[in-house]
Image 1: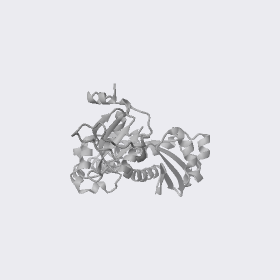
Image 2: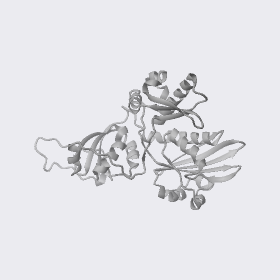
Image 3: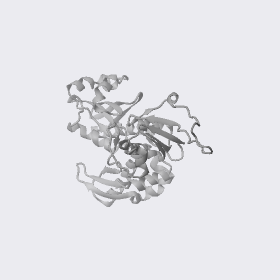
Image 4: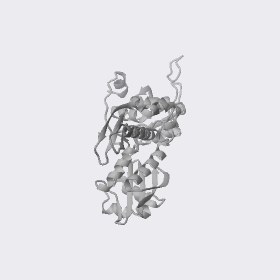
Length: 344
């Protein structure tokens, strides 16, 4: 059955494809540490959870203070589906926010929204402490603070195995250097969308870190400091999240509407494309063989970043066939041409 025939009868099945990007689970679930289960402590932790969630979904530290969220700030319960306590350690309040009402509130407030399909991040993290120097590897106990921080800030984090060959690559010189080639070569087998290199140091009981982030050919960098490793991991992941969000978050009413064509479609790819275009309010316009056209609300740069998560390639303008009116029925207007074209 052709894709167009399949869509016409509305029998859509969801399939998952191998791609680097990840659908982040638990995006609307937030855990905040508490000292007790008293009502006052719960109220404070709930407000903190709301702050964490809004920052996680928008990448904007000032978003919660938006006038459009005043009612939510006063009464977060209207977007909370349930809450409970996790014994830990540390003991924490777990708040589950309702995705539908949360997204609606953010959109009505005119805020940018970063969807659940997010770039997979491979983290090269080197710790230098009084106990020596060590590269954090997948499966090590020292990796847990990094994983918790990444989940808390809404980032899909992967870690290298930190075997002998990777320890030779994950040096302070490579992690702090501006040339990502050694790390990129060693990262190929992990299939990530972005590389995060962090060199953390302990000095007089405090931790500092220098970090670099590579997304394609673009680089971001920064530094962080904290009292312990867990707080340092959270500070780094927060900074990375705030740098990544503008690439993917879509603000209602700001981005322009445009037609997007994707070539090489199959039934399996349809579900994946739907996830990718979810933040852009995609509306299916037409299907022609293995080509599908959507009306989307987003900038060209954001669409390129989002579709790049699934390794789609943009079709250069010079490769687009010229449009002719041959065979066009009299009195029938030609379909508008897409402004952006991509292919699998």
